Image (cartoon, rainbow, N blue to C red; front, side, top):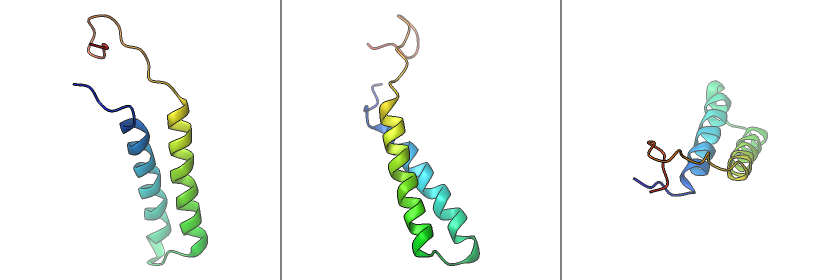
Length: 66
């Protein structure tokens, strides 16, 4: 099964955004500053995750390139 090269970044961005918004909504309101913090968390997760390459798989291993 080949997973898109974008999947890792998308999952990281969703996790960062959801975590930030969950913490922001703990008091039943999301302020503008908390919204900006969630946006920055999503963008940072996308950028940092995109910058780190996937570990190459070993031949015959479960993460092989074939």
